[in-house]
Image 1 (cartoon, rainbow, N blue to C red):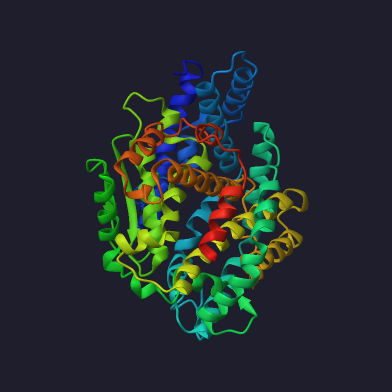
Image 2 (image 1 turned 90 degrees about the vertical axis):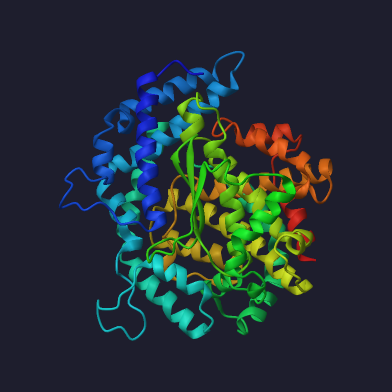
Length: 498
């Protein structure tokens, strides 16, 4: 356990808790505190003002210097390095917010504001918040309505590209303070190269089959295939949680961890679509935000959230704060993607989801995994290019070209800078997905094809969950005796798409 930087680490832990609470409220669609009654409301500016050491350049410098000392130790102590790395990375993100708190706050609130004017809307009356459009758009069956709604969303969000630019530049400045370099995107190039034929042949055919369009696809067509494929009715929203319980009983696994993980499946107007794992009071309490929806996508998201929630409540009560609140983002993605990938196992679908699908429907689920990987890769490359081009019209066009290669569809100009992050968020997601595929291959080899219902396979999963944020992607690759890369993911996706 680390004994250095005690004050900084404790303050970072308290700061992480408040930021997690702010994030949870937004995800769950809960009302923000009334600023007229509470002058100390939890805005980003107020939160950071209460934790000046953790949000200052001095705090970041302390973490950076101590990490460098740990890296130069001989022998190196992996636990110390991983915790200091996650602390440094967290403080860098916090420092970026501190450099542009107003812009960061406005972007945080953006999804809940009434901004999107649907076709035919003459003014602000009837305008929709982006979070609600994100819920409606993918499942809208009428293609023309879907396209009009996406154009309205793009028009509304493009007005805030200046804010995105300010936040991106603040992130760049914080990265310089932290000693972080622009990440290597060779894994992204490899992922695109490895799956080009799948996306441009099978992917284009399935887009046409699902939308009725003869080419000229838009982003909304991709979303419709991912969220509402033809087989969606085979996955009723009322069966979502029951499917997870059936699977958990086979594995002899308690997805609520003795009720430490609480499910919030209320449908609030501003609740985010899908399922998410939220930290509340790790390791004692976490929450699953679930918005029950029809389709395989909803099931995959719930499986992912169940796995990620285990990382919040898995560590012991006396674990260091980094193990509870921080950690390698790729590991968290990998834990979720490990179970999400069960959607591409026909036996799992028959036994647990009670879904009997045609081969083309199975391929539609598989191609969704291909598009997920390719969209991540495209976004990560675009973010790396934006470091050189700046968050500009040129960077937006570069992202649109990469998206078109990834999906054969057009990304609206107004959405091209939305989601681009100077920190390697998209790359972390791709790294996590690649690791998850290698972990599934390891589990299949050790516990057979139906490892997901073999109680003996639960032990290695719980071993990972119990470490929380302590473990790194590099360590997990070593534990499964595999070389980091895209090979396992490429093989799995190709097999599922056959």
